[in-house]
Image (cartoon, rainbow, N blue to C red; front, side, top):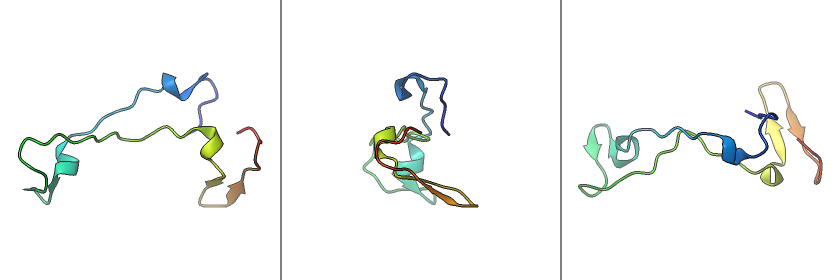
Length: 68
């Protein structure tokens, strides 16, 4: 998602999912007992790191310095 109404990605509230999604597999613990998991639902990528937008219909290449 690109939200041009925001001044910065810092304004986006990141949803976090359950620790167990990264500390367990098929209901079995794969991390030490009591380990905490960092599990954001998504991340925010700075525009300068985006070189293309890929969709089902096409790949839109972004030239260096071009604004999204």
